[in-house]
Amino acid sequence: MPSRRAALAALGAGAVGLAMAGCGSFGTLPGDGGEAPGTAKGSSAAPSSTPLRTTEAEVPTAAPVVAPAPAPSFASDFTVPPIRGGLVPVITRITTAQPVVFLTIDDGITKRPEAIALLKAHGYPVTMFLTKNFVQDQPDYFRDLMREGDFVENHTVSHDTQMWSKSYAYQLAEITGMQDYAQTTYGRRPTLFRPPGGAYSATMRKACADAGLKAIVDWEAKSNAGHMDYQAGNALRPGDIVLMHFRPEFASDLDAFRSAQLSAGLTVVSLERFIGAE
Ligand SMILES: [Zn+2]
Image: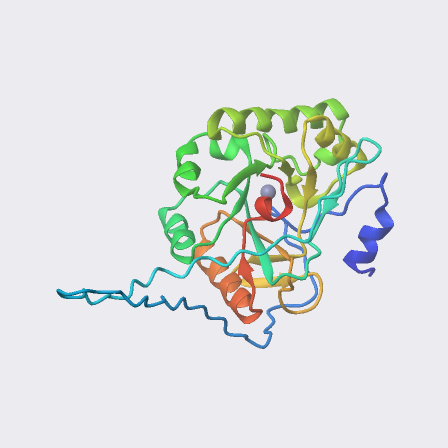
């Protein structure tokens, strides 16, 4: 069986993308679990104690103010490829030398408070590829979840995993319907698109470009059923885009991701900010 990378390369501009076992259908992928040598990273800011020039009276004992360690920021070394021939690029991971990883969470069917609490506790920025028909009964859930660096992106109106094979008009409607809904509901027009199930086609890439999107974003690693699946290797790599879902097993999926992220010594940063797609 050809590797996923070979399959992708063989697709070319005009071909159809392979379904990548996402969003409800989970095929087998090589490589389960995986542990990388851990690199503990710590940062501590030592406040400088400035000597005070005093004349008299008491010098207040300067209690060092220890601010919470700021999230490290990483300069981006990645540029989104331009739209060529009317087709958006397809990105499956970010080529970068920075020790960063990106967390994407899809669909939006399951809306449990613990998912919000866990994401906030870990301080992970997230890219949410939401489907209008899954979230419109409770859009506030995702608004409550959002913090700085979090973004809602486009995962269509109805989550039709066969949409890649359908007409341009059908695909454009699926895409623009969610563009409009996100704009109205969350105040921002998405810049990124994730195909339902991961499969894409030239027609889809054209519809995305015509709807004003910058790129199709797929993945090469995912957390599912409480463990990590990798399409290459057995650990997270810098620049990996990780797929998760809003599902009942969210907590165990996030645990699996966290363990892999810490083992690999990577920091979770906002995908949109890193690639300039805010
Ligand atoms: Zn999905």
